[in-house]
Image 1 (cartoon, rainbow, N blue to C red):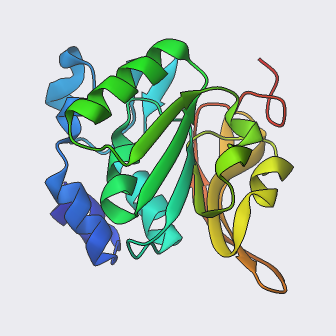
Image 2 (image 1 turned 90 degrees about the vertical axis):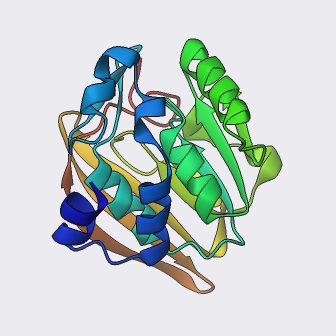
Length: 205
């Protein structure tokens, strides 16, 4: 997966490649999908949600440019796979999942897998986690019509936010917004398709 799907397609972030080579992806998908865990495609994990394809995950993580000292907010815990990768790349991770069963299962699995630095909460991810803001980086694993203002306000300066954005729920552009000391900078990372970001500052449920 790492050699052909990631490095072979242009991912050049050594820490990201190492983390994805180390973490066992099959542990974060349902048993019936374990044989497909390393294919470069999203897989269903229940509650109408998916675990994103490895290349897109790698691209998002690489864009955050984490060094190991950061406090990170993740929106859309899902199975906990990306949260675990973030824990390997940053100092502390706060992750929010709106589906109660997914949040519970992810929290249990992350604890058993040895990631005490990951804090899981069930709630509306579009509103962030203001009690623990600001965050050095924010990663959103669902597509919204815009970047929620609450998340932008909780990003530290300097800091990076990566999220798929699009007016059509079926197609988005992956954006990296960088908050500087004197403003913002944005760049597009390509076209993607994510499940909808549902919440007060996203799509309606």
